[in-house]
Length: 444
Image 1 (cartoon, helix red, strand yellow):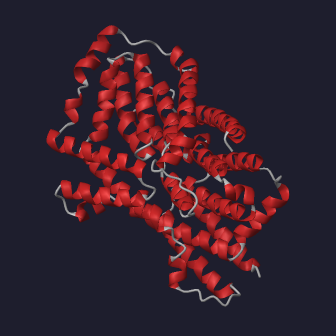
Image 2: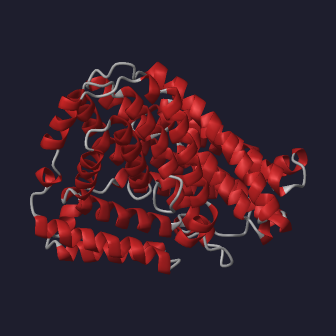
Image 3: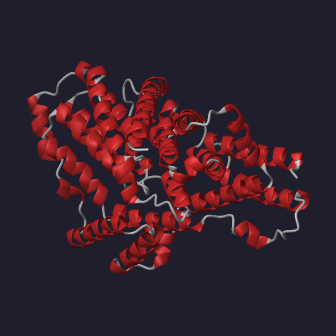
């Protein structure tokens, strides 16, 4: 028997957390932890069930594998950043272009997109945006088109691997809990990567046509200056340590292709890298974003409460009454709604609620249960690419805008980023729908 008070109050708590997390004006972690405690207390006092609700029940609602994966990856990436591996890649990419502005555009966007498939999108912005602005100043060309291209395409990079973003980690980890599904690196390679690279190609050509052709070309004197000033060696403090950690990083990412237990690879990889660098673990623990881990743990509890009190089942029953019994149509609706919502609100809570709805649909629909790939693909595409609809929808957009404002980049403002971001988010959504249709008729 459902309890309306429990359903309404916990739903309000979840909405408040989404709004607070998206606004970034209030400490979202405090609100999330408080919300999880209140939601748990409400369930304990309103659930009409012989099952004993104790601390173990709520701890069991937390999906630990994604959290362990995030912990391990944060340590690995923190070490890689300290050894300047990604800075080296960024400077090397600029040097390869030899100051050719069009080549700079393509190389930097492709490298930053591929980097976003490995590290957090906001980290990519922090590394590449300042270097791009400085390079464009030396070349005496406008940096806005390059920044637009970078920040729009970073979200494409976040789509193509299971460890590129918190949302992907949660979605992959969640569906890996099903014994019959393996949403790992191989799954992404077979189902998502091709779409990501096609989308990157289309986006680059469109950006070139709409923005780059209008930009002034760099003069030869300035081109030579870039070639002389920007040397990859300038970012290396310790070449031996750099090479050692680069090899370890390659080995770790290669290992992801040979196991479905990605969280174990991340954890073991983090321990090996810490031992190799002869630092105490507590040193790297200071660089871990614990607020992210505790925030996700709180959300898992709240979503678990919403499953227990019947909220998710009510949403699923409502969707079943209005949606046709067609997996393709359901997947397209999933893509569109998750894309739009993640443009206005935070990606992580949006992903969690859609994951819970997907669980209910898999349980109720044997066709989806037999092959949920298209539904998972729709969720991944919508969550990752919808962030471009508004700057606040993606952390990398906010970071790039902050860096551009600080450096007084002409033509890169909240208004222009919203204009171009929304346009490409719409283009990406249309291509996503088309890809689902093709996948449905050729593969499903």
